[in-house]
Image (cartoon, rainbow, N blue to C red; front, top):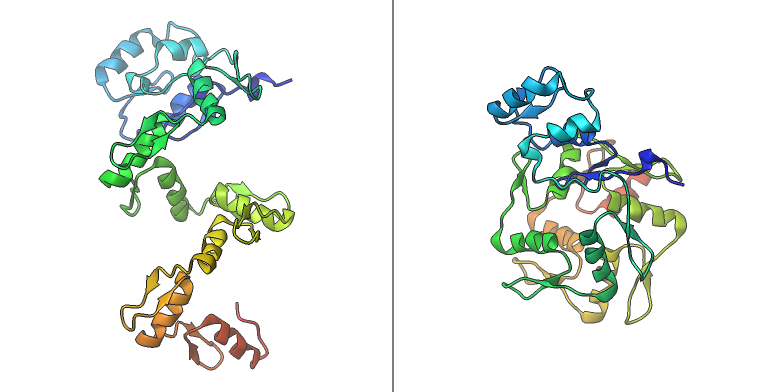
Length: 289
C-alpha cells in the first residue's frame, strides 16, 4: 500500500514539482516568483500585493496552526490562482479501462485516454501539426512565433520552454540530480541518464526499417539513415563538398582554416584531428585524455 507521503496531489504547473502538502507548494512557487516582496512574519507566506498581506496578517495568528493545510487553504496568495490544486484528499477515483491507470481528476483521465485512441484535437493553424494536449500546442506555437519567454538571469539566454531553462541552469550550478544506480555516474538531464543506462543493459530501441540495424540513441539512428537516403546536409562554402555528419564537416573545415585545436603538451605539436593527436601521444608513451 502507498503511504500518505507517497501521495503528492499538489503540483506546480510551471516546474512540474509535486508535493504532499500545500505549504510545501507555496514555498516552491517562490522559486518562480522571486519578485514577491510582502512577507508575513507569522507564517512566511509572501504576497505581491500589500493589501493581501494586510488582510492575511489580521487573521493569521488566530487561525489554524501555522503550516497546517487548513491555514494554507484560507491564506493562499492570489498569485497562486493559476496553479491547479490537484485533489488534496489524495484520492484517484478516475480509472482508465484500457490500462488501469488511475487519476485524481477526470480531465487528467481524458488527456490520458488520448494515448490509447490517438486523438489529437489541438491543431496548429500555421502548419497543421496536431497535438493531444493544448499545452503541447502552445509550446509548439513558439517555434513559429520565435517567442522565448523563459530567460536565464545568469547569462541572458532565453528559452521557449521552462523545462529547457531549468536544464540550462544546471550548466551554471553544476547540479547533476540524475544518478546511475549501476555505476554512480551523475547527469544533468534525465534523457542523458536514460541513454547512459543502455550502456549497462545493452538495450537498442531504435531500429532502422531499411536494414534492421539497431541503435541505443535516436540521433545515431538518424545519422545511420543518411547512409540509405544519401542525405548530406552539411555543405562547405569554400569548396562545395558535402557531408552527412557535422563532426566530419567540422574536421574538413580545418583544411581551409588551418585550425589545429589539439596540442601536445610534451612537444607542442598541434593537430587538426583528435585521432591523429591520440596516435602522436603514443610516441611519448602516453594516452591522450
